[in-house]
Picture 1: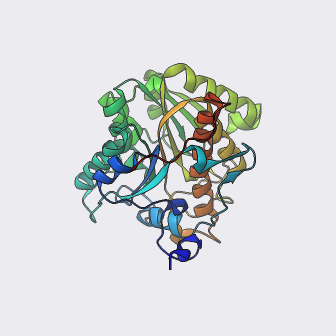
Picture 2 (picture 1 turned 90 degrees about the vertical axis):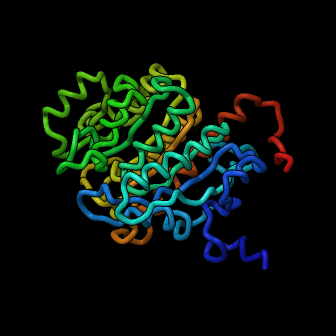
Length: 331
């Protein structure tokens, strides 16, 4: 019955129907380029819960489009060995345990020279995930391009230091990722307040609001964001809160904010970043499928990951344009 694995609507739910691994030792034998890992945690959510179901939904209910990238002209998995490394263990209600487990599982990937792609979960998971990447590549050596409606730089929310509105503050305060190494795109709405933005200015953070995108055009802002990311760090971590999209494109999220960017713009920018920069980590967070409609949000999140993979594959191909795609690793 192996043929069932070829059906998008049947068989084991692994991302992109990639090999599903559960043990760290299997990473040693497979030696992939990229490992997908879930972080099914949403205790940090302030509004609508449910992002813990995001990793499963992205794997199981997204429409599987194939693997040939029309714009890039390549078979993604001819150039990248990608596996699904299951989920970090996130027991209900246990923030510290869950965050530690996320950090350990991402570290197990990154420390082996594999790029982790993390499926959230609420945005608090970026704190342990990006820290794990910085543990490997060095504090201060990793920059973050952060797509979001919200800056997520609050000091605390209702006494919670590990809220989904605080991860970027925690990363900066810990030294893992300096404020000068942040580029944020898509901010809008009514939060955080002025004093938080004043703190962000003190940290030398860079951000591009939706008003700026409206005034200057997305291509101009995109060009600046890429250049800023390239200038600030040799290694790049890309964090995508799906609520950066307008709710018309992504209704299935905990804190929808009208007035966001389109799916097409987000996908192209993620692809460009992963093609032009040494990306050492990606996360896609805040997919809450209970509020979704017709899998709009799930499919958008799925395609964000596929565009990241396409960009990485093109970067490898571009580095050796006369070379044939690498064969599978020996096992």
